[in-house]
Length: 139
Image 1: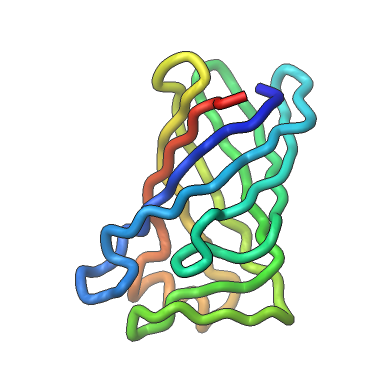
Image 2 (image 1 turned 90 degrees about the vertical axis):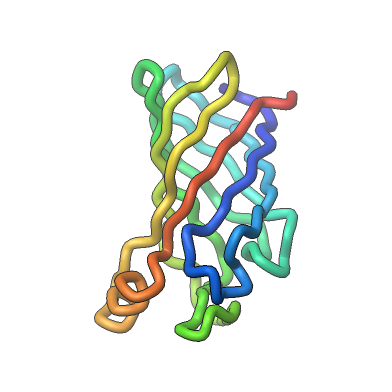
């Protein structure tokens, strides 16, 4: 598990949004693994549709299932009109990833952002802040 993983994610969002059908590539660097729990860093490679900065991940592997939380340093959201909005003074809400092993050293699944306030929950319900993802080990 320790090493560098290349991945990508897509938004499950309405066709009228500029985010529709966009893929964002990212790199995971797993630095800690105890056979079940892991931790490391993550960085999106696309700052137009992804999130700027180096984030952290913590997760767990159980048999062929994987789950982790991605925490980015800059709050980046999709507004009601489908546009990207950044707030450098706030951390991004946690992003929850779940998935399964496809082959040796690759996983895929779904991600979502849970609403933490009334406004966030409303936006989540209206535009569906979720999507799909995949990663494969490269080093």
